[in-house]
Length: 253
Image 1 (cartoon, rainbow, N blue to C red):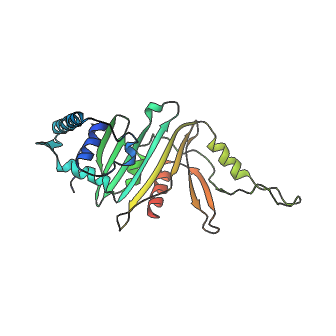
Image 2 (image 1 turned 90 degrees about the vertical axis):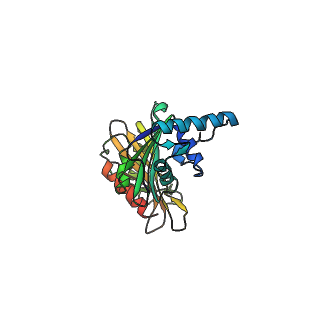
Image 3 (image 1 turned 45 degrees about the vertical axis):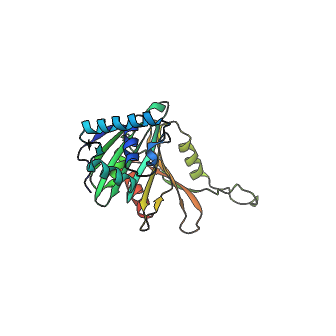
């Protein structure tokens, strides 16, 4: 496949219109919930024509047809073998919320950054996908914090002997303190693959918190390899650590 060879910014409605013209199914979740617009047939025709005119101005359409470069780019997103994507919310600035995606198919990859109004598309190398995705997040250093793993089924002390040692709650207390600290932004991150049967398989969410004055931490769920109990993990979220976590998560799908 041959993708676009330079970054391009499209109005979100034009992007979704182009997607629908190529019959690619439901648009990717990063495009949000306002993917469907009620239109009369006349207005739908107007949007289609204006979209093709806009794409034509950017050499992405010709003679009423979307160019193969853009078609292949959209298809890479629709039928990706590997994906890293997520949503970001900035505290106190809902207008700055957005989403990002890095999708690869075979050896081709595309990065998309999405706001309420526009979609930025740019080609990226087909390797190091997690790092290319992490680059879309604000450049926040990892917080200096203690890594902890806490079972979600913390004992509440019921049935314990009155003479038993008090439960050690230091890890739980640390987790609670970090999770309730003031934050500048929240990032909900995922990775996904397409299996050999064509089924899309998505990870559980990884949450990155930009803690005010401290830096970024990440938290996620996994199962204890010995007991099978579901655990909450918390660790520093430096760009390198977050990249490794996303890569490892992708490899386990």
